[in-house]
Image (cartoon, rainbow, N blue to C red; front, side):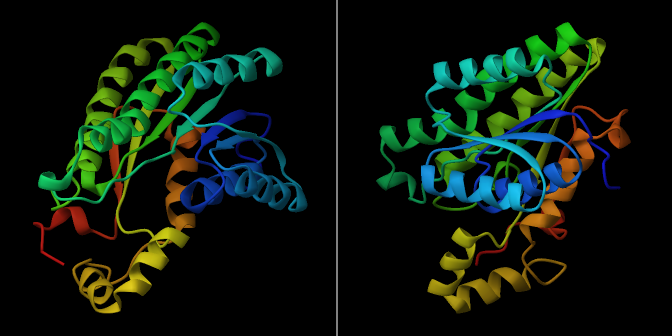
Length: 257
C-alpha cells in the first residue's frame, strides 16, 4: 500500500488533531504532499513537525474555514502553486451540545458555518479546479449524528445531515468530469476530545460503548484508512456514497446513553 498516493497534492482541513491528524499522517506516509490547515497555530506546527519527522511531505497553515473567502483563496493558491489539486478532505468541524431550548441562533449559525458553509465553499472551489484538470477526489467528513438523531445535538446533527445531501448533489454534478465526491460518517471515535469527554463520565461512556455492536469506540487511524481509500484509485468507481465508520452503530435504532 505504501506510495499509493505518490505525487498527489491533498488538502486536509482540521488536519492538526484527531481524525485530521491521523489522516494527514497516513496520506503523507502514502506519498502525498499534504497541505493541512486548522484554527490553532500550536497543534498545526506540532502536526507538521510530526509528519516531517516521519519523512512526509507537508505544509501547514493556520486557517479558520468559517472564513470562507480565505478558505476559497487557500484552495486556489495551493492549486496554482503546485499546478494540481488531487484531493480535498473537509474535516474541520464545530459542535454545540445544547438542548434546543438553550440553543441560540448564534450557536446554530456557528455549527452551520463550519460544518456546512465551509464544506460548500471548499467543495465548490475544488470541483472547479478538479473538473478543469479532469480528475480529483473530495471526501467530506460528516458524522453518525448526520444519520441518527440524538438529544442536545440539533445544530450539529442538522449541519452534518446537510453536508451529506449537499455532497450527494456535488457527486452527481462532478461525476461526468472524472471527479468523485464521497462522505465518511464517523461514529464514536476516540480522539483526544472524545477521550476527555468519556473520562468525565465513565459510566455513560461504558453505556455508549455497550451500544456499539463492536463493543468499543473507533480509533482515528481507522477513519483515516477509509478516507485514504476514497482518495485513492482503489475507489475509482465509487462516488456519492456516505460510508459510516462506526462499528455497526448505524444499523441500530437510537438507544439513550
